[in-house]
Image (cartoon, rainbow, N blue to C red):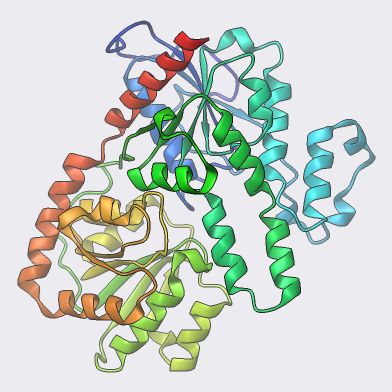
Length: 426
């Protein structure tokens, strides 16, 4: 990728309708492998370029993987989570750089300030460059500086799920008053996101659940929201008839052991199944840090049957899905659910909760159980493991649904229609 705003991409197609647009995609974090933020930004950028538009990406660290034909502007952050003493990371120059001071001050008063600090840095970087772009498309940073930016350049934002839901789950799970206060303080940015989402002229939701939850939690006007399911990379996530599925292997992802992800539900279900299935194994993508999920496995004495791998490539993830007997997606809420979509594309039977958009993603091709119900999850996983004919039908139906439903080019088309709408209104 080019690290400065460069020339026209070397290879583009003529836009399907109208002139080529100069699109600026933004994301405060864009890790290429952990979570979906970097995947979303990278895949949307490539789809927009395929449609003939000129794309520039501005991101804070970690940065996305992009082809050389897409310009990447890196906006460094303080990365205070990576230092031993965040308070002592203060430098006098922060007094003259508001984004740095804001990030430092928030971090050291138990708040999460990266979203706001990134948007401030973006606002500063854009000054004098407004004429270089037709539209800005933000990936759910939803920080208030975007309201200032929107007065100079049209802005839309993608919404995945309202972080207010994470906040509620996290506060409810805290057992001490001080922990509840600290959790609420950390999630202080939610009010900022709510305000921004309600004011921006147009939003792109990655599912109907993402739209409806923002309407319910943030008071967003549903008439300003278009819906387009995410795509997936079908060159990576695909069936492979040469791979034999391993018996008694459950696969899952673990981006974080927080209540909304439902890892405690999965581990409880796994322990129940493991009592009568001596060969049962669980292989997870991600790290299983100290927390409730790990405690459940340790107390049951089945930790040795669980394998965790992190920092792996998308190809490695696809390989796991291709050989797993079943993939479990236990989240209490998802705005979309990349693991379910990608697993289906690899022909893996999927058992998912009914949290958020997961029923939309799985459709009729998988099994859906009530979110938070470990017994129901265990029963569904056991049924798939015990019924090869049903598992095969889920595999075939899931792969076909993934091919038909999850298309980045179609997602980009919806985005472009929103760009044109907000540009016409300016």
